[in-house]
Structures are given as C-alpha cells and as structure tokens.
Amino acid sequence: MDKWQNARKNKYKELYITLYLLSAMIFITAVFLNFNWKLEAQTDLSLYFKWNAYYIIALLLLLAGYVLMIYLNAVAIGIFILSLFIFVFIFVFHNSYLQVLLAIPAAFAAFGVGKKFGCWVAFASGFILGLIDIYKCLLVYKLHYGSLTKYFESDLIFTGVLVICAWFVGGIAEIERDSRNRLINLANLDGLTNIYNHRYFQVYLKSMGEEVKQNQQSLSLIMLDIDRFNYFNETFGHPAGDIILSKIGLILKEKINQPALAARYGGDEFCVLLPGYALSAAYETAQEIISSIENIDLKNPEKFPSGKITVTAGIAVYPEHTEEVEQLLGLADQALYKAKNNKKNKIELYFNVLDTLKSSCSKSENELLNSVRTLLCVINAKDRYTYGHSERVLQYATMFANHYGLPESEIRLIQYGAYLHDIGKIEIDSGTLNSLAKLTGNEWEQLKQHPYWGSEIISPVKSLERVRPLILYHHENFDGTGYPQGISGEDIPLGARIIRIIDSFDAMTTDRPYKKGMSVEEACAEITALAGRHYDPKLCQVFVDLIKFINQNNSAGDWSVT
Image 1 (tube, helix red, strand yellow):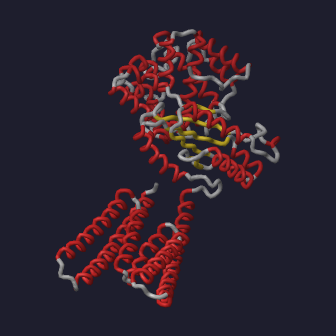
Image 2: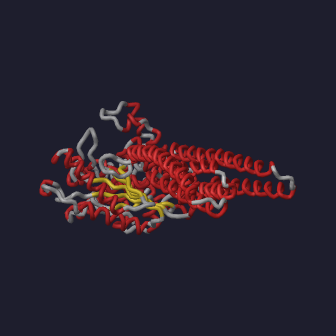
C-alpha cells in the first residue's frame, strides 16, 4: 500500500476515534446529568453510591470500546457498545431527549459502511424507540392508548430525521469513496491492459518482499516480453498492437489471482509476481500464460514470422537465486535478456555461474562475489553488448570445453573466466565503450588495460585465484603480438587461449551500431586465417569444426550451460 494510502487510512482511524471519544463524552455528560436529577430529591447515601457505581461502570465500558477501536481497528464494536448503552439509559431514565444521541451511531454507520446500512440503523433505532414507548406508556405510566399516539408521532418524526441524516452522510461518504477508488485505479492500473502498472508493481514488490522475508516464504518473478512486437506494430499498425496488449492483459487477469500480481512493466513487457511459488510452480505458470498468449487469434497470421504471437520469459526466485528481494527484478531481467539474445520464444531460468562458488567461499568472499555481481550489473547498464557478449562467450566456452573433453574442474574455471573476462571494462567510460567512431590513441590504450583491471578486481576472492590468468591473458595472441604482456604460445594458459578464440568469434558475428556482424561461415574463415597468429591453431581447428557441425544441423544458438 502507498504511503499516502496508509496516511489516509490512519487519518480516517484518527477521525473515528476522535468522534467516538466526543460522542462518549456527550453520552456520559447526559447520563451524569440524569443521575444528578434523580439524586436531587434523594438523601439516601447508599442510593447515591449506587448511581455513581452505574456511572463508573458505563464509563469503563465506553473506554473498553475505545481500546477495542484502537488495538483491533474494530469501529463497529465501538459503535455497537455506544448504541447499546444509549438504549439502556433511554429505557432506564425514560427521558426522551436522550434519544437525540441515537443520531451518533446512525451517522457512524452511514459514514463507515454506507447510506443503506445507515438507514437500516436509523429504522432499527426508531423501531426500538417505539417498543420502549409502548413499555413506558402501558406498563410504567399506565397511560391510555390515546397518549401512546403522541409518543409514536414524536418517534416517527425523529426516525425520519435520522433516516435523512444517515442517507445524506452515507451518500456523501459513498461519493467520496467511489471517487477515491476511481483515483486509486487511475494511479495503479494501466489504462490499456487494465492490469497493474509499473509504479504499483514496484510498490507491491517492496511490500511483498518484506512479507515473504518475515514469513520465510519463496517469491518468484516472471518477466515476459512479446517477441518482434515492433515488427507487429509496423506491419499491422499500433491500434492492432494495442488490441494484442489488451488481450494479454485479460489473460493475465484470468490466470493470476491475489496475492499474486500481474503488471504491465513496459511497452511490451509484463511482470508476474508469485508469492509462495517455488521455481517449478513459477515455470508451470509461465508455460500456461505463454500457451494462452500463443492462442490469441490473428487476422493475418501468415504475415507474422512464426504465424502466432510468441513470448519470451525470464524467471528468478527468492531465496533460491538471491538473498535480497530487491535484486529479484534485475535477475529476472538478466534471464529474459539472455533468452531474447540467444533464442526467442522460450522460458529462461536465471543462472549465474558465480552462484556455484557459494558453498566454497567464506562469508567475506561471498560478500566480494556480491560486489562482483554488482559490477556486472553496472557493466550491463553501461554497455548492454558487453553483458550479452559475456553470456554468449560463457555458453560457447562451456560447449567447447565439454566437446574438447576437459575435466570438470577445468571446465568450471573456463566458465568463470568466460563470464568475467570483460569485468575490467567497469573502469572504462561508457562513451568509449559505445563509441561509433574509431577510437583515439588514448582511448585504445585505456581499453587495452581492461584485462589487467579485471584480474585485479577479482583478486580478493581466493576461490577465483586460478581464474585471474584467464582474465589477464584473454587478449594475448598466439604469436606474442597481443596485450597486456605480449606472451605467446603455450605460455598463454589453455583457458585464456580458448576464451581468445570464442571472444573474437562472438565479436565477429554480433551486430554492433557501427557494423553488421559476419555470417558464421565468414567468421569461421576469419578465425582459420588467423590461426597461428592470433589463435592456437589446434584449438582453432577444433572450434571451427564444431561450429560448422552445429550450424549445419541448424542448432546454432541453442546451447545450454551445464
């Protein structure tokens, strides 16, 4: 709940309590005056103490109602107690002016619940007053039926006034309540899809994060992105795109129920927050949502690349993937980006190779690893290519190391090195990283320092000690013409030589703002041409053969990290 909503709720509670206290004071004053009138003609002290005992009991009960309202937020209980004692003292003292006090619970009921309920309270008060008058006239005062008519007339008029007041107060309260709900919906809901918007999602994520931490529950987050939605808008027009978005909103409203929440996070991005859902349950939910979206009818499906609307999803789970709920959104976004970058129309579970180090690291080293993750997030923000590039190099390197038959321990080191090989770019200005022009001499010299800076960044983490050479030497050439130290041949660690080949291959085949990427065949030819100079010729041949085999079988881009 927003801060202003909490503040508003507290102000209403304060108003109720204040009105209740004032009403209680008026009621007690009226009762006290009646006690004095009853005692004016009395000289018996025992009777005096008896009436004061009644007075004290009434006061204590009213205070009990006040306490209930504060600690239990039980406004209705306080109103009931107040109404009950008003009727009791009307019955005991037989003073008709006390019936004016009945306007208080009627007003409370109308304001707090609604005009209809307030009117029912008013009618019930009039009915009970009538019963009291029958008792007074026929049994107490022994009056005839003619006198009873006057009392009924008075009660009828008074009841009518109560009803009018309750209807008026309740009507104003309902108008205010409806206006408030309308404004809340405008603030919280997306106007097109009619599900929650980005702002409310952030608020709910924060409040739900505190709740799941307190209750030690899991919290899953699904990020959904519509594939090729820009193409859809350009082909069919933005109104048709809006219709698709509204249909996806309807699907999410149907599939997601409280306390889970679905929200439109961006233009073609949606988020689903699932409290209490483990990874498997979140994955099944994502499958159901995507399946329903793919069944949306298209007027001209043949014009769409896949013939249907497809969606890519990224999933992250607390506490499985992170110990901080605040990081959940970023992790789901990383998983989504990885899926979009490698192969659309799939569900990607968050994976970070650094997580495998948790069990072997000390508490201080885990804190350093968290810092490394933070640096990777910063790099992602500075240069989205670098992050996607590191993910792809990790996948290529894993595939190659497994194919080459390396032991598991060596494969894991290469995975760490591949994932972290560009972490030193955190020290480089984003303008240099994203420059469309040819780098100046100073900029190039600065860029050449990133292997050294990267190795220094991870140096405090002892578990990554053997990874440092892979980061430091991943730009060394086989003939000794590389940087930063110019070593050559097998002096370059095996993992660094593997990363050198894969790093170049991904850079060659990836589109950049200043150049279009090569085809796989062109990149393989370039790698082969530079074998013996930039790359280890033996490793080079193995890699090229593997890439060609995969490309021929149309499986490129569908490798998984093991």
